Image (cartoon, rainbow, N blue to C red; front, top):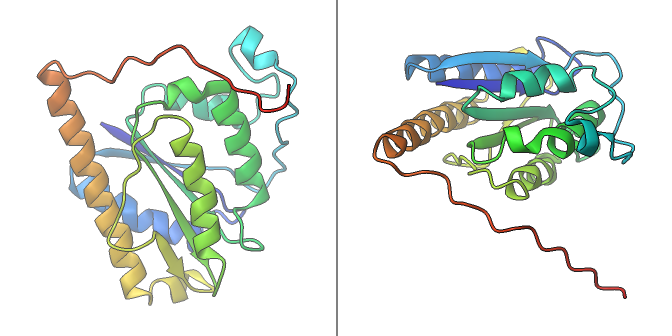
Amino acid sequence: MKVILINGSPREKGCTYTALSEIESALIKNGLETEIFQLGNKPIQGCIGCGSCKKTGHCFNTEKVAEFLEKAESANGFIFGSPVHYAAASGSLTSFMDRAFYSGGSKLTGKPAAAIVSCRRGGASSTFDQLNKYFTINCMPIVSSQYWNQVHGNTPEEVKQDEEGLQTMRTLANNMAWLLKCIEAGKEKGITFPEREAGIRTNFIR
């Protein structure tokens, strides 16, 4: 079983990476395969709502999104990490998730996910809430921890001093591993993901 950890920070080895690394170490101890997927510091264009992906099955603008979705198809769980920018997720991660979920959400449906955020001081809760909305609209079980998934610090060294935050990351990893193993055991007993009804869309202005 494999978990992909998405680093939505432009800093490859910054505070968000430090938190994700703590999670990764605990996942490996639980016998899971991991990969930290770096968004990097190059601009990621937002979704333009062109509908091309509905016709072709993939986003026409392929940087990072296509690479991730190819990996996502065989992955079992996901953890999306972001620094806090103006009480919200990073612009690159927001653009990335908009496009990944819109063009390839079916590759993530039914798979456990979690969000983690890194902040100097404030804005963590609103960012955490923002990221969780992607999972709840896509039928993805959300993995919880002992507190909201956040670490505090202005540098990786400061994050490493946030003992409660790092413990929250480890608990999250243990819970992710437990849930993935439960799902695998359920499959072995013939328990499958619920069959979905045909979608219904209600417009309130007629």
